[in-house]
Image 1: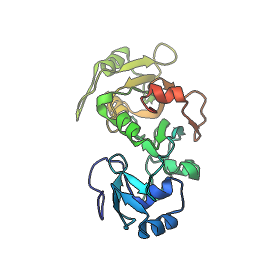
Image 2: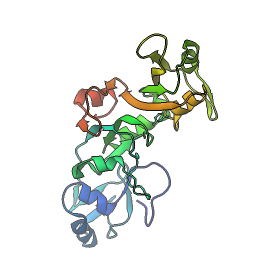
Image 3: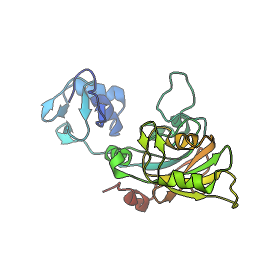
Image 4: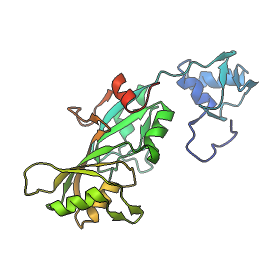
Amino acid sequence: MHINKPPPGNRPLKTLERVLSKAGIGSRTEARTWIGGGRVQVNGRVVRDPDVWVDLELDRIEFDGKPLRSEQRVYVLLHKPAGYLTTYRDPQSRPTIYDLLPDRERHLVHVGRLDFDTSGLLILTNDTQFAERMTNPEYHIPKTYLVEASRPITDDELDVLRSGIELRDGPTRPARVERVGESGGNGVFEITITEGRNRQVRRMVEALDAKVLKLVRVAIGPIRIGDLPVGKMRELTGDEVVVLGGGG
Ligand code: URA
C-alpha cells in the first residue's frame, strides 16, 4: 500500500476507491463513503483514505470483513483502425482506442501498443498478470504484420529481414517473412517478429531504404484477425486465452 502517489514501475496499482468501485459493488462516491466509514481493511488494518494506492496482487482487501470478490477476467480482441492512439487519454484530444470501446470495457488495459498509423489486432484485458506476461520480452510472443512497402522488396532483402537487421538499439532477432501475392514482388509481405521494440517493423523496413505505406497486425500468436471488422472487438474464446497463457 502506498500513500499519496504510486511508486514507479509496472505493478498493477489502483486507488482503493477505484478497486472497490471496479469490484462492482457500488459507485466511486459510495466507495469513498464506505472507506471513510472504516468498513474497508487493507492487509488487516482499517484504511480510511480512499486515495491510497494498493497493489492488486500483493495487498489483501476486505470489505465488511469479507475478502473482495475478484473481478471476472475479461479478454477482448480489438481491430484497431489506423488514426487512433493506443493510450487512455491524449492531451491533444486525438482519437484513442478507448473511444471505440463501450463504457463497460473502458477499464481494461491494452496489452502492448500499436502506432497511431498501424491497424490490426490489440488485446485488452483486466488480467494484469496476463498483460505483463504478454508484454515481457522474455516470453517472445510472436506477432505477425502485413506490410506494404513503398517499393518492391527483393528476395535478398527479405532474407536480410529474416536473419536480423541492425537497428540503433541492436540487431533484430530472426523473423519469419513471407512474400504475399504475385512473385516478382510488389512490396507486400508478412513478417512475424518475437520482439516488441518501438516502431520495430517500420524501422526494419526503413533500414532497407524503403518506407512502410501500410502496416496491419494480422496475428498475435496463433490468433488471426479473420473477419473481425475494423473498429470492432470480440471476446477471446477460452481456448484462445489458454493458448496465450491467460485464464488459469
Ligand atoms: N511495428 C511497428 O513499426 N509499428 C507497430 O505499430 C507495431 C510494430
